[in-house]
Length: 315
Ligand SMILES: Nc1ncnc2c1ncn2[C@@H]1O[C@H](COP(=O)(O)OP(=O)(O)O)[C@@H](O)[C@H]1O
Ligand SMILES: CC(=O)N[C@@H](CCC(=O)OP(=O)(O)O)C(=O)O
Image (cartoon, rainbow, N blue to C red):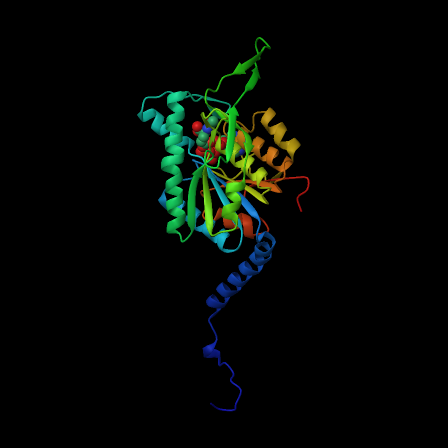
């Protein structure tokens, strides 16, 4: 070894393209690190919608992101849907199903199919994808624990012609009566990532079909989650001109539901977000699950992704 200090010659220096790439990478890491620190040990409830699931590659990308969240010290809890997949199976079995305001009217034969598709098929597909991505996933439904005690959903709607309030009968559609999060606390302190199918059980042992947004929201509130992320197949909530709304107040959301800009499956989604931020969740975000690494962009960048609905106590 010579005593002379080493100096890099021009030919040793990385070329401009490489240096630009390094600068980009460094900028990305610099942006992400404070978010990693901020969210360490916090709980994220991620609702993975049936429309967001897409193909195998999209499922693998989602699974990778979930594993990454766990690796940086966040506790992700996945709650999944599967509406389109249930629809296909019901059709194959020639069982009719209709929707009222985004919720499936579910009779006894239909609830059996719903449980089979959600807790059987889709739950295990997601568990498999997360495990293949290097994580340790465990699949459960709201019946395990039991995590979700359900009661029959009761809803009324005013008939615009007669102005009479009508009771809507959704059959075996439930709403969470209570959530007992103790089973989820076990996963929080371990490497395991829970994947939850939105099925509930009533006090008298009946199985209930719960809208996955509603189930995820109830879990997010019970866990006092820092973030409640809903992955769907649109960039977020769109205004009447089809433009993405980045942030939305509760009043704005209610006005958009009332004037029909928010309709169909987006109604329970937004209502659930409003409920969650009123009940202990810091912020809820509706985002596109088909965007590669949308979850990471939302979590680790200042600009985020999708539509953020913030609670009064968010910081
Ligand atoms: N204002 C709106 N902005 C975005 N999407 C909307 C809006 N109103 C209704 N939608 C519909 O809501 C759908 C998302 O809800 P849903 O089909 O239940 O999704 P998921 O299966 O992911 O839960 C979108 O695909 C879109 O068709
Ligand atoms: C009562 C009700 O509508 N339950 C839903 C449950 C699945 C779900 O919510 O799936 P997505 O999130 O993919 O829409 C259904 O039967 O389709």
